[in-house]
Amino acid sequence: MNFWRVFLIPFACLYGLVVRIRHFLFNHGFLVSESFPVPVIGVGNLSLGGTGKTPFIEYLIMLLKEEKNVATLSRGYGRKTKGFRLAGPESSYKEIGDEPMQYYHKFGSSITVAVDEDRRNGIRQLLKTDKKIDVILLDDSFQHRYVKPGLSILLTDSHKLYVDNFLLPTGTLRDTVAAAKRADIVIVTKTHRVLSPFVRRSIVEKLKVKPYQQLYFSFIVYGKFVPFPGVEKYVDKKKPGLIVLFSGIANPAPLIEHTRTLCNELVTLKFSDHHVYTKKDLSKIRSAFDDAFQRRKIILTTEKDAMRLINSPYFSALENLPLFYIPIRAKLHEEGRHNFRNQILEYVKKDR
Image 1: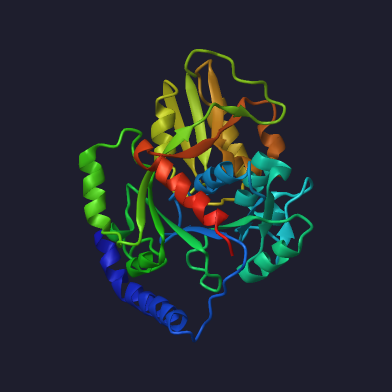
Image 2: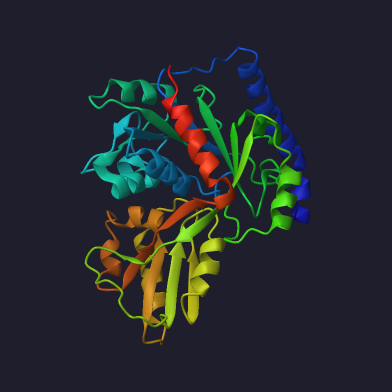
């Protein structure tokens, strides 16, 4: 913890008191968590972000969508609308948020994508739609205790486990470490592709999961560059001379580390999580590209950022440039992959 954060400890204690009182009210029935007859899987974390919720929701979608009618329900962070919204062909990130927009962009009508800041109302509305919903995936749901998921999945970044973190504003935890006991499954995300037994054992000893909880480990797989509309596919087999990488995500460090291996020189531009790009921002990105002297150069961003750019009124500032995004997906380590799949499928198939 940085020295200056010590002065924020009183505020963290006050914040922690408020959070604990709220949990007390739910735990003792003063505030009520509602259950639903449809399988509901909640995916969330204890921190502000950066644990890989979006790729993990997509992992669950891929696991379930062939046999089940899957719906995702998110708050729709950053959208300009209120209430319940279903994603459709005319939807934009301003209407439903960038993460739900990414789900719809990737999976289309094979799943149902909805947003509602009131998760209870959102589930009720989903169950009223014409399409029979077999399972609902609640995106970023761990703090939304008015809904009680039938199965709760907690994600924690391997580089910053929740047990090594502190409550806001001293650290980045928005919930207490003790809240982790409500999870049925704990997944350590963003590990190295090859996970050493020593590292695994160290994490297991730190987390000390409960006997009723299952612990799994996952890593990120980066895909091939995807061109923006109007950009020809990148076919040069040589490394780009330079990549201008810009992103508005909570933790860009793993992406930066990966992108360094893809080029001879890397220029990075960092923006805040869920950043809405202005004309000035896009001009800055273009200038970074124009000022580079390398011959083989491209601009790269994340899939989530792409959802905020495609409908941007300022997108023309990047027209006629080699602009791409890099998709990512979560993958469980082989040791737990089969057991996790069975646990999810058994829960969804249970009679209710």
